[in-house]
Length: 74
Image (cartoon, rainbow, N blue to C red; front, top):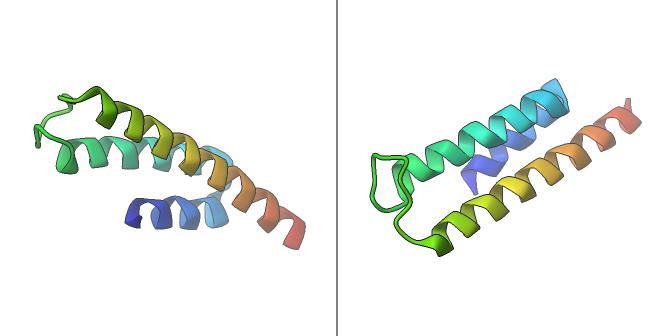
């Protein structure tokens, strides 16, 4: 959940493109630090890969929505 907070802050301050980059980097960090085997970019279970892909898509979708709302508010 903390990775989403970073993506949201970047979306509010920088827009969609930096937020998408932030979401991709967050996904890589999630994979490296929290997915077994840890401290590698290898994913042992296919379900973990699907989970990470869904989290990445959700983060990008939320970033697009937040950027749109911020633009309308301005």
